[in-house]
Length: 205
Image 1 (cartoon, rainbow, N blue to C red):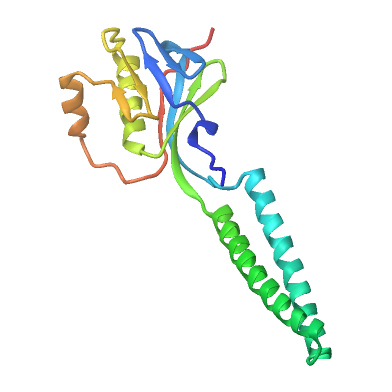
Image 2 (tube, rainbow, N blue to C red; image 1 turned 90 degrees about the vertical axis):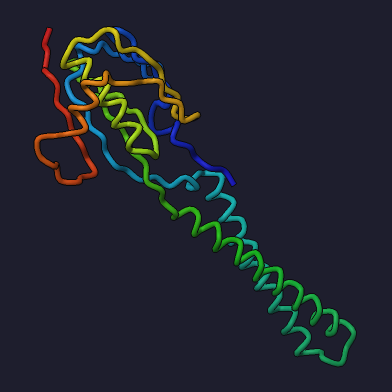
């Protein structure tokens, strides 16, 4: 069966340079970032056209084999003492068994098509109304990237650079020690939430 990946939902690799953020094929100037939000979403990884077609074929074959299997049993019931009636009996039983197996397979695929998995999206909005998503199934990694970008926005620190590849779970980004300590001890606890939005300065040109 085919399976969709998170690459279809947004960028998975990027680089933070002195004054810009590279995400996939998009380059964003740090000073042009207006908003950042970490959002929770769901997607159906197995719901692809090819899998839907496969499930439809299995279901059609199941119904057809069950129909012809019942015909075989009916033929045997009409001619129980004849040779062709016995053939109809065994053929009918075989078709019914095969039809049931195909029906089970079709039902399993149908369940997989409906299965949904969570993922998180770091959505970065710019002052020119663009929105560039970065996706992963680990929210903490996206929050770490967001915090590094936010630190660069707040302080103008050009020394922090690095790169990340979420396909390989590689994140080469670090906040300075002082910033990490202040982030670890907030003034008051914030309520837990799935969507975390940061709005930076809005710059117009």
